[in-house]
Amino acid sequence: QVQLVESGGGSVQAGGSLKLSCTGPTYIFTYCQMAWYLQAPGKERELVSTITRNGATTYTDSVKGRFTISRDNAKNTLYLVMNSLKTEDTAVYLCAADRCPNGSAYWGQGTQVTVSS
Image (cartoon, one colour):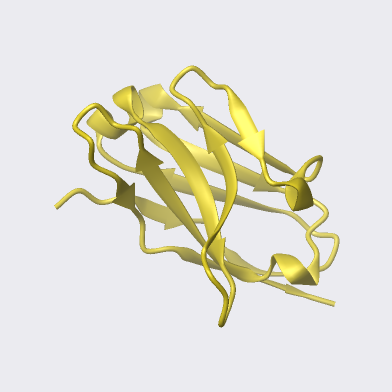
C-alpha cells in the first residue's frame, strides 16, 4: 500500500511558524502533482496549496503570502512552510498526490496543527 507520511505539526501561538513535511515513494515524486489540504473539526476538507512536478504553485487566498509550498524530488519530500499562523489555521493538514500517470491519487494520514491565541 502506497503511503504518504506527514510530519512537523504541533502547537504554536498565533504569529508563529511551522514547517510540515511529507515523504513517500519515488514514483509519486517523479510523476505526480502534490498538494496540501486541511480539515478542520466539523468541516469539509479544503485545498490549501498545490505544486506541479516542475514547481508551479497555487495557493488558496487565505494563505497567500503566509504559506510556501515546495518539493524536493530527489529527497521524495514535500514541504509546507507556514508563517504568521492564525488561530483559524488550526486543522489536520494532509498531503496528497494526484494527476499521476496511473490515474491514482494518494493521501497521507495527516498531521495536527494547533494555533492558540
